[in-house]
Amino acid sequence: MHIAEIRERLRTAGAAPIHEQYLLREWSQGETFPSRRKPEEFLPRALRTILPQLKADLAALVALRSVHPSQDGSERLLLGLRDGQTIESVLLPREGLCVSTQVGCAVGCVFCMTGRSGLIRQIGSAEIVAQVVLGRQRRPVRRVVFMGMGEPAHNLDAVLEAIDLLGTGGAIGHKNLVFSTVGDLRVFERLPKSTVKPALALSLHTTDAALREQLLPRAPRITPENLVAMGDDYARRTGYPIQYQWTLLEGINDGPAELDGIVRLLKGRYAVLNLIPFNAIDELPFRRPTWERAREMARELHRRGVLTKLRQSAGQDVEGGCGQLRARSANRVAGPGAQSLSAIGTRAAGHAPGAADQAQR
Image 1: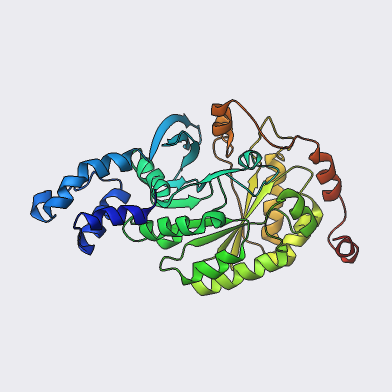
Image 2: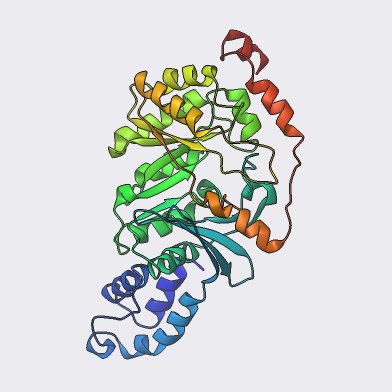
């Protein structure tokens, strides 16, 4: 279901724009509408008649299947959709929520469990907002990050429709709506024109274009240099720093060549680099570097002029990597096996990008 369908139902029942705005605000903020006024005081009779069914339909968009609390304060939520598919949301410390935008994902990042299942279906804009509503029923939510299952750029209309409602009636500050993407030209075309302009998080993961193609096999072929250039342009348009996401994989993207590449690309930029140690997954062949190694990288990047934050992957103690809950609930793991690790590791162990590497691409 999409938010546009909810609006159409309201209008068909006689809702004026002020009624529509009020009811969508109540819903997106997690209230049982209408909460502060009696319906007969201001809603048309025909509209009052449909509210019980509409309320039931919205409540059925996502259902809580299971809760997986972590010692770090996060809660991994397995959610069921009306067609029987499952997705994941994560309640984060400090009033944050990570939501899913697709069932599965077509990008196929080799270190991500979600990508192993491929894309199953898109999530409607109302289903996206319903994840926020459910999260707000459990605890306050003042920050929403679109970093769960799926690639938001591949469901762009629905994601932008959800962002528009959350950034207006949903009372989420625009900088606290974080659109995460591997990089897609449509994102850089559409987001600057949106009424609600979210913050942007770009999945970088490496400064080596050839290695990035291996790690993100079906991402658009945008070089790290061009991705950073487009991120810089968006930062200037919005006044928000760009977040660059870097999943740390031991022996693959944590070496000296990558540190040099990060400094080359990000020093002096209006940006922050998030170093995120890999959330270990039994079915995948990758390893997370030691915390000491991750801290050493962050310190060196700081010394060399790159604003860096070392993030702790949420839900380590409950094996809560993106897609793990869904995979366990389905009792299956699909996708390619572990044989790609040796090839990726061999490529990553090479020298820093230079003329010889350029000739091989």
